[in-house]
Length: 247
Image (tube, rainbow, N blue to C red):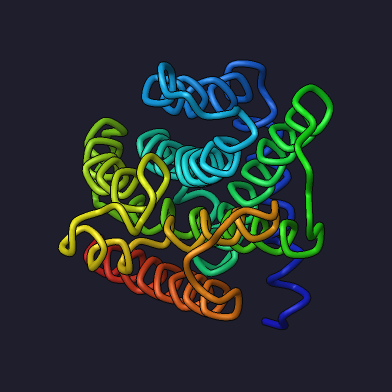
């Protein structure tokens, strides 16, 4: 099958998922309010201007919105048989996973830019480099969407099992990625662990694009996010294929 053929089916699946799962008021409200409340619960009481906190809010928003729906959709579709019907359409597993990854990507980008527009209009957020901000949002959304698809490979039809495992991985990353505490303020162990978190480099790109002090050179941030993207995507495809062979 040709690349355009596969791309067309992936796009059709992405549009289907966005229409059915993503572009619903409860999902959009979850995408906005859950990361916002999570962030504010740690930010309230700190004597820091809101514009200084927005890079961290943006990073958490992209992180959670891009990686949250895929791990819900795929186990649910396994339970209803929709996932298997897609594969017998005939549509390849690569097309199915690509479509679901694109849906998470577009949702993460959409919610992130809502936060950016809100911060710019109401709080005077100053964007120093629009292109870098766009690249950071797009690359991070794709990386975290691939992360969600990776965890959806867990062989279960129970959404709770997938989300519990995913959150066991995601939540610690928030505290070692320089969002609530600058990286240089972390203990040596925390600074070492922060280098293993893709969220660290997302936050660093946002700091750079908004004219704040960042930790790593921009090419390093972008290069490491690309590495994580390819790693998550490759692992997701391999694990889904392995599960299909067992089934």
